[in-house]
Length: 41
Image 1 (cartoon, rainbow, N blue to C red):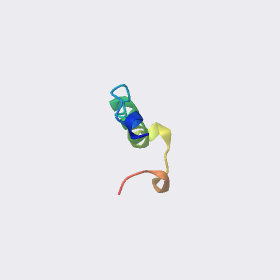
Image 2 (image 1 turned 90 degrees about the horizontal axis):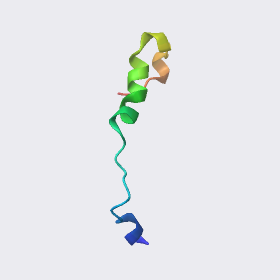
Image 3 (image 1 turned 135 degrees about the horizontal axis):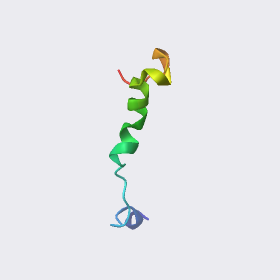
Image 4 (image 1 turned 60 degrees about the vertical axis):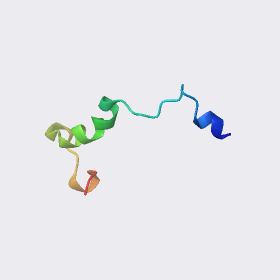
């Protein structure tokens, strides 16, 4: 079972755009994200 986890074809590193998408949306004033829903801290 663990051999499936070690398979070199498995890629768990997210793309940078995907990783930063939510924080960038939260910083955009046009998105109107309320403070209580922002990630961080």
